[in-house]
Amino acid sequence: MSESADLRPEPWAVYLLGLVTPMLVIGGNLLGGAYTAMGVVFVWAVGPVLDILMGESKEPRPPRASGLPFEILLWVHGVVHFIVLASFFRFAYLEASVSLWFVTAALSTGLSAAASAIVPAHELGHKKPTSPGWRLARLMLFSVHYSHFTTEHNRNHHKWVATQNDPASATEKEGLWSFWIRTIPAQFLSSARIHARKGRTGISNPSYQWLAIQAAALAAMLALPHGEVMAVGWLMLSAIAILTLEYVNYIRHWGLRRALDERQTGMHSWNTEARWSRWSLLELTRHSHHHLTASVPFWQLRPHPGAPELPAGYYACWWPCLISPIWKRWVGRRIPASAI
Image (cartoon, rainbow, N blue to C red):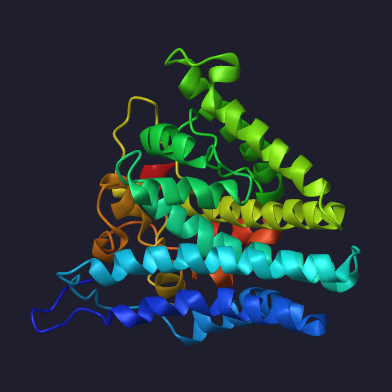
């Protein structure tokens, strides 16, 4: 892909499309009943169609000079996410039982959290530790019971991506289901080891501390009226948010490998220019550039020439990815020989 001198940056407003899902989920949780399915239908049914219909960006446009609208957008996502959670807990309180619509609301809320909490938290988590944005990232990750993610992602995944030392990189033989079972506990243990190597062991280990705080928060919720229903819902929405995050980890590095002493290149991350995935997920799809220079903010990421390309956007890859033989047949032929 070439960049023409007369091209202008994309309008920053296209990234507001990422707010569609949480807005639908808020509306569904407030209206109740079948409306709680709006988030599920939009993400799992409409999203793949939009990925296909909106096509791919054929020519990358230059990044905008000012990052202010994008910095504000990250905080807007954070605020909206907690409104989504509040709407769900209100619905759970009123529903007062684990009904069909309760499960649907939890699924919709979890899918919203994956896109509107974890994605911005991933971006903010690369900021300077203890900065306001970094703290917001930790709070959003706590809200889905994945507080250790920033530590493991920044200090292990980025260093060892596509190697045997990275639990978030899937091998070519691995299917999504087995990857989920392996990577989720492995990433937590990896984060704990990172802190332990710095002398923070036992109860002083932040990974264990966050786990204890999350358990205490659940226990406190149980003391509320209908607290057991809300606690079950919180765990359910967190589970779907985590599984969605790890699905994204799976497709971003699946089958791309390097030796421990081999230099990381743009060939060790999958990319896609699918517009819907790009705009609604804050350029997660330009993953090679992010790995090569993690400090570059999402609005300045560029497509990497020659990097392996997924056959479709993140939304459109979801259903094929759930069926391992289909996924391996569809994507396996695209694995570059240099990245095996």
